[in-house]
Amino acid sequence: MHTFRRLFIANRGEVALRIARSCEKMGIVPVFGVSSADANAPYLRGKEAVVLGPGRAEESYLDPVRLVQAAKISNCSALHPGWGFLSENPLFASLCEEHGLSFVGPPPHAMALMGKKSPAKKAAKRAGLRLIPGSDGVLGNAEEAKVIAKQIGYPVLLKAESGGGGRGMRVVRDEGEMERAFEEASQEAKAAFGDPSLYLEKLIEGGRHVEIQILADRYGNVVHLGERDCTVQRKHQKLIEESPCPVLDPEERERAFASGVRLAREIGYVSAGTIEFLLDDVEGDPKKGVLRFIEMNTRLQVEHPVTEMRTGIDLVSEMIRVAAGHRLNFSQSDIRFEGHAIECRINAEDPFEHFRPSPGRIQRLRFPDLEGGALRIDTHIEEGYVVPPYYDSLIAKVIAWGRNREEAIERMVRGLSGFVIEGVATTIPMHLAILQSEAFRTNRYDTGAIPGWPPDASRGMP
Image (cartoon, rainbow, N blue to C red; front, side):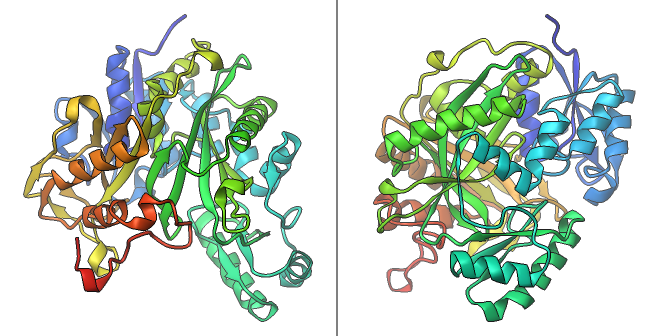
């Protein structure tokens, strides 16, 4: 069966380079679509690239017509969207297919189904996944929200039907807050996603964020690649991810795996995808908790290297193979999970100044020792690279593997301590504070706060 000769990368930075590495390993020529702000980036040296348009994402990475045209004129037969931008846009996936481009991702119908939260929840329920109590579908108005909130009990969470990343979301703790919160969330959802629709869920406080990695081919073969704990977050954006989840009951883990695979199979899912859950906190003990379905992310996740480090499976290569029509060449029983892996996302932000973005030139850069492959660094930066102000501030991901959680943490601390990055502020000090905190080491934290940050002023900054 064929594979692709040339593949267009409709993204930038770290993920673009990550996709290119898998392409080159498979003998595929990667072609980068870039904005004018990225056109001279060092990571493009010696690579094929097509300038899409100006630095603003709306005129480059978010313009579906420009992306498809660029892919066609560069004689590519497939397109990988990475994450962010148009990666979960079913209309973009359809546009690619209409113009003879294989979209490296799920089919548009599956993407559209899981992109709307209410249909996604109904599909998850049919597959046997447990749900967070809330509305059965989209809310008509604030009055309807009040009725449901009274039934399930405050506090509740208003969430955008078509969104994610914390936008179009409001916590409501009593009936008096509902009307204002409903109006604000609806307006924000419309501005961010073009859809003001909201739904409502019970706010589960003290929970943990857990996700299951799924991989499927077009012949109905579906496997899971274990779970990741993504509880350490700031404003609903993940900071640290690890696998396995250190507080998940084994029976609950296996039940969720089986239901997640069933969900993917029943909706005709193809490619890599991630099913996200909230692990509720029963009687203060998350080990007694239940995984409750939140949503499905129909794309490659930023944190996919955590899974790769435990399984040895190259997720990007598998996505490309599946898009080319190949069957999965392994079954569930072939997958082996080894040790513990942790990822830290390094952003060009100043954690001591309310995480203010820190674009600019990287004047000095030194990477830590990779400890024989047990430490992995995914990055597109090098000395002299200019971090542009237009996009997400992620500049590197550090992934550490250990035989157990303690060894993985210690290896990550050594790795982060061995970095030298001068010219821009980074979040490395925050990560070190988290990893060295008692709360993180003993698993006494949840999505409500960052363990170990801000650091105790009496003990000084790390």
